[in-house]
Image (spheres, rainbow, N blue to C red):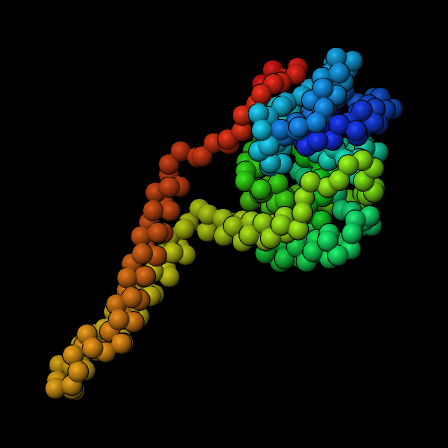
Length: 317
């Protein structure tokens, strides 16, 4: 199979038929063998009914329905696990991503040697205040932190070699940082393509301003995981040792001062410097223990994804 198209969705019943027909037209005109995987992330409208009808009329359509809304990352993870195509294309279900971009994305993976190609919505039709400006700031911070030189990390339209999606774990809300996860997994041939962005035709966006707050928090997480995820002792242990030495040195100085320089002065426990030194040593010890526990956790079994599928159509795995 040439292409698997993975489409996570939440309450997009109006756009699914049009999106399906558009994708099918592109596949047929380019003679691609394909599958379309709709991942219904707990929709409360008639999205699953529409997917079921599409699956009845087109055997290339497959569907996975979650028991409740688990988030886009879990939806992508389920789609990646089921995808069988040599190239996996992800796109949003709201018709803002253009399926006509698929042939060139496919070519960049199969003929130009890229592991991953991310779309870049250079010209956007979103609100400048609520989306464009925060998105530019977010992408700048992601570039600086991760070292991955992309203009649009959060573009839903991406292409992957099948080996990439089978070797990365998309968890939490890390779908924004899939290129970074791929880089950390060793897939360094990451490209970018300017893609056409379209105004939303039906419904409304499912993401608010809080996604940028969560995005920056996730960015800090992935920065830490990238730098110290496999060696937490290098961070926590080093900080712990430094703080303990500072605290111990301060306490040692107070002891010498009391014994030799000012034996008739205040008791050590009456001096605020003593409690500062004691607190520093305690914090240093805790940081060291945190690093040690982190090393133990790394050697424990990897936490599995948690999502619950309610129904599935034509999906064998």
